[in-house]
Length: 251
Image (tube, rainbow, N blue to C red; front, side, top):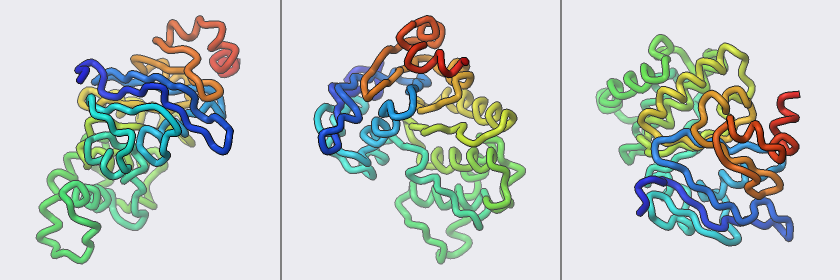
């Protein structure tokens, strides 16, 4: 096992009835880093995420997580290994409070289903950890607020808290800033930066300002292939990248 890379793909390819959505992608994500996957619409970013989390079966290629071949594993098995995509468990219950939502996720981590009928004393054993997670994502004051009443950015922070409840080693975030205003973007960006001290993060994100400020490494996809990879400073000077994506994004 390579200690430097937590996630690797070799020749990862996905075809749909003759259409190649992802083609021969070789990806290496360094342990403890924030790695961004960017590209124009239709570049294959979401398909790549679905392949990594096993919601799609690759046509060809190999996926390694912590040196283990996970290519043929089911999504739940991959999540149990510590590779978690935020939406896998973070679709919050709108009429439960923030504390209750995180508590439900903690039940899942400890092997219990969504046992709403269990006695209050049993459920309350999760409260301390749930409050810690809410504090970690800046939601302590919203503990008793139902999710449906929370501002959009705070709801996204709650989704991250429910993901953290599974105690993942690596998190895949699919457009975490989507639909947010500037204030919420700044808060979620700061949150991602803070949690990256403990977790490896791979994210798809269209906001180039966020990508430039957060990412250690950026992989640019276009037409399902890796066009370029490197730091934002390097890629922003790459004429191929400018033509495919970055240039248009700065216009």
